[in-house]
Picture 1 (cartoon, rainbow, N blue to C red):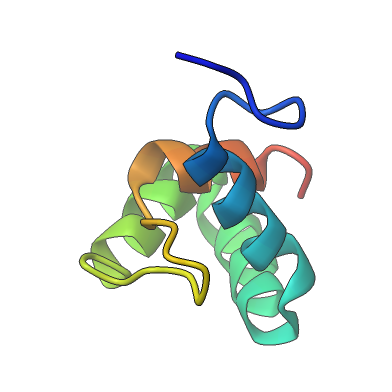
Picture 2 (tube, helix red, strand yellow):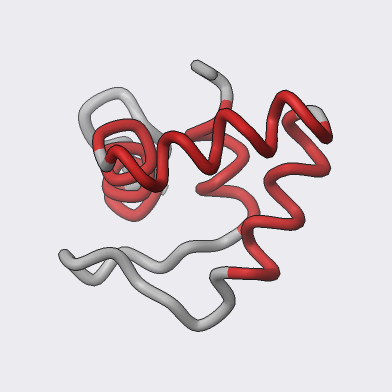
Length: 72
């Protein structure tokens, strides 16, 4: 798999950008991490966002969300 801007893929990079730069998504992510820890937060967020995409077309999935939560 090719890396993209230091991330494992374009999708991981795109999901990271949206979670860490959209105020409401970031607030939700911080709340989830504080309440459940990163791994469980990623699972719960992925379940809640199942089938959803970023405005740029990136798919929210557990792996991409978990990677985005690393910095939180």
